[in-house]
Length: 112
Length: 117
Image 1 (cartoon, chains in turn purple, green):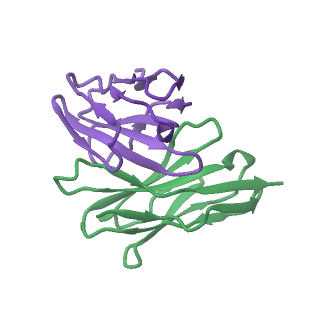
Image 2 (cartoon, chains in turn yellow, brown):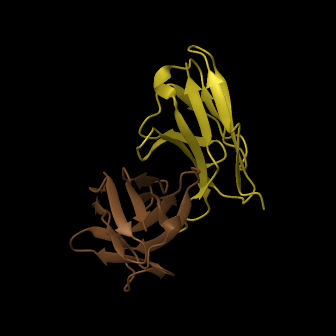
């Protein structure tokens, strides 16, 4: 099993550019999440999904969009990149509420 | 609303000594789970230990144990016999388990542990 796979690992964007962070899991997990981690800080929830076709906002959703057309994929879209979106982005998933969160390896994004 | 507090931004411990990393939480949900994750300098998130709110005994995983004091709403991580490889950022996290919360995990701000010779 590959687990949770995120691409790309690193990316530099110019202000105003758009991009999609890809996240795929092969564990048939219903719940998927996107977190961001600013330098020296904890993780903050951007968006989450409880199943295909269902998404909802977390703590810090502004400037982002998500979709969940399949159980496996949960891409995160940045429409107009801003310096405040410079962060490390983690995708994660679980099958049941009592389970640990399975994390991807993260995407380091810089907006200059 | 969920809230996790880690009051120690940084901690030092000598190799082979034990160290306690503090975590307090706030929730009105009687059913919840508490997690600890380790984040080394490489950046990945490594699951360490889990404690359910209804678990009768404190969780243990090898050198990691969780000192769960439900009435005080604290879930401190104890690392015994510290090793140089334990140097990392440590995050406490909580998930409310009742329906309607989508099993979201809320994280604290972390404690950076440095193990010295």
